[in-house]
Length: 189
Image 1 (tube, rainbow, N blue to C red):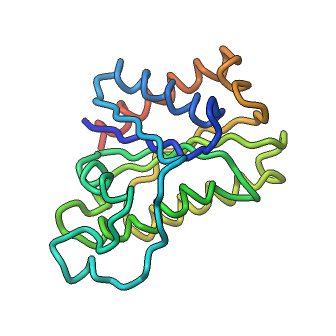
Image 2: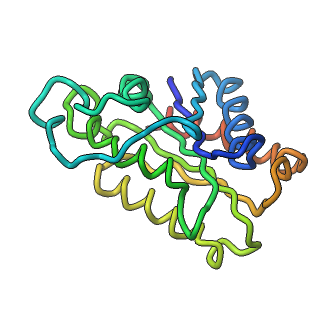
């Protein structure tokens, strides 16, 4: 089983990245091959809505840093997004990445209906509703519904300063178990 974990925070030592690293540990111990990528500082341009990907054997006509991730996305059984909540939703970098996934979703070689998706979020406010985390959750749930992908859940925390999440043993233990459980749940399908 292959899990692709996508970190999308620009900030070094980010809280969502700490969650991602610990989830990867738990998934690996449970028997998965977990690949963690960090897109936080890469150049990922907008989807042009040209739909060239629909009529081509290639993934996308835009050749930027995103291009290297199409095959890992296509090969993954489970894709986990890790993002800070910025202005009531996921980071802009994560949104750019997701928009460009159209190039994978439309191709017969890796339909999302065979994949599981999960998410990891960190936010400043103590409340998931007031912070906008619920908007991020809903976006992923809707994406899974529309692509017939399997929604496998989310883990999120209130943490503002860099390193805050990593300093919480209870949260890191929860993230580790989340990684283990993703593997167990996916294998049940």
